[in-house]
Length: 331
Image (cartoon, rainbow, N blue to C red; front, top):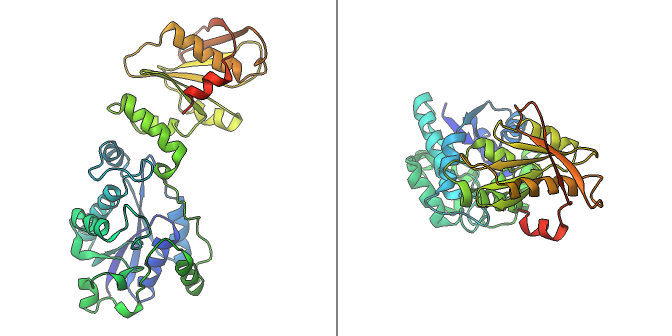
C-alpha cells in the first residue's frame, strides 16, 4: 500500500486534501507544525475527524529565525508564506525519507492567495523544498501538471480536484460530500496574518530583531503595547485573564507597576537587553498604570513598582497619562 504524509494546518483545505487521498485507499499520516506563531489544536481536531494519525513537529527556533529575514519577503502583514511553506515541506520531506512514505500532500489551492499561491509561487515552494517530485496538491491537481505519483498510477488523477481562486464554495461543497462537518474559519490560526499582531511584531523587529525570541513573541499577544523609546516599551493588562497570562511571562529584568491605593491595570516596562530604563520612561510607565486604574480622573496617583526579585517597592507619584498621547504610542 502506498503511504502519504499530509501537511495539515487544521484548516479545511489541508483536511480535504488528506481525505481525498485517504479515500483512494492510500495510507495517510498527518503532519503539523508548532511555532511561536501558531499551535496544533486545529490540526489535532481535523486529524481526529478524518481518522488519521498525526505527527507534531516543533520548529519554533528555526521558524522564528526565518521570519526575521525571509528570502521571499512578507505577505500583506508579516507572513512569509512562501518561505514558510518551503520550510515545512523540507521538514516533511526528510521525515518522508526517514520513515518510508511515498509522497507528500498539501492543501494549497492555486490562486487562493495572490502572493503565496499563484502558479509561480507554488513552483518556488516546490523547488526550494528540495522534494519537488514528491509533492501532490490534490485540491488543484487538475490545474497543474501531473506529478509522478499520478503518472505512475499510484494516485488516480481523475479523483482529484481542479479548484482555483479565492472562493471557498467548492471546498465547502466537497466537505459536505466527504462528511467533514467541523472546520475553522478561513482566517486560520497563524498570528503572522493578523494585522494587529503583525504591527507589534514589525515594531519589535525594527527595534530589537537580533535578540527577539519566542518569549518576546508570546508577550505580543497580551495586553496593550506602547513604544516608549527605541529601547523600551510598556505592556498594560486589560482584564484578569490578561493579567494571568502576563504574570507567566514576566522576567527578572522587567519592572512591574501597580497603583498603590487603587485597583487597576498591571503594567510592565520591558527594555532591550542590557538597557536600563530612564527616569522619564519609568514615570511614563507609572502614568499608564494610573490611567488604566480607578484613579484615572485624579490629578496625582501613587504608583509602586519593582523588579520581580526585589524585596521592596519603589514609589512614584504621577499624573495619569493623557489618552491622546497614549494613542500615539500604542502599537
